[in-house]
Image (cartoon, rainbow, N blue to C red; front, side, top):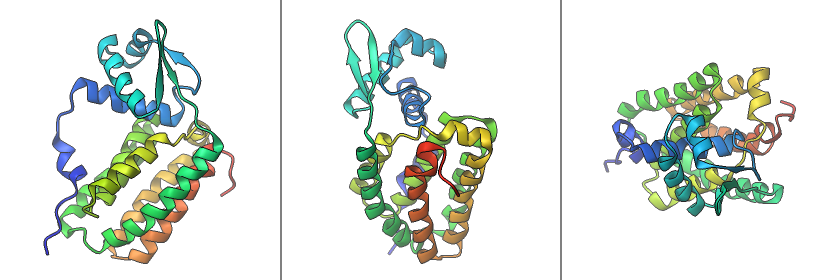
Length: 226
């Protein structure tokens, strides 16, 4: 049976609209904590921050409001929603149920021809850290992991994980970047690709479990011991 190429790899060459680019950048800024929970941001201020007009920002924020990441504040702008520690624990628990076994199954079916493109996605995560670009880091990490999950052929599963990842907050990324520890965590994506290329399904599953654990420990607070 021929396994279809993951949608994320197919769409690498897709040219996003300005609204989509702004939405993805804002989402990543929220997840990384660059845009702070509870703070109200105006569309003009965000437009100046991201180098665009207020119109695509307003449109993008309305999209993110549907995802629950922001709440519109009449005549003021958009408030970044807060997520409780319990919610973050619950999100991580659901991701642990879905992602590790899905990656284990995917390892067996990823076409050899797709491995270089996946390796490039892993390198994009490392490159973002080296630039000190937290927003770029979150975006690249998102694309890489959804690309792997895409080999399940289950669009509902991929969409569910995408939504869960969007609700996650990684407020400890900045101190980890400055300490150099985020770079070591970014390199872990190459470790995962080594396991994928070796067709080590069990090893890839276990690494994914540790990876998600980092989200609630090391990356969430920036203080967890290695």
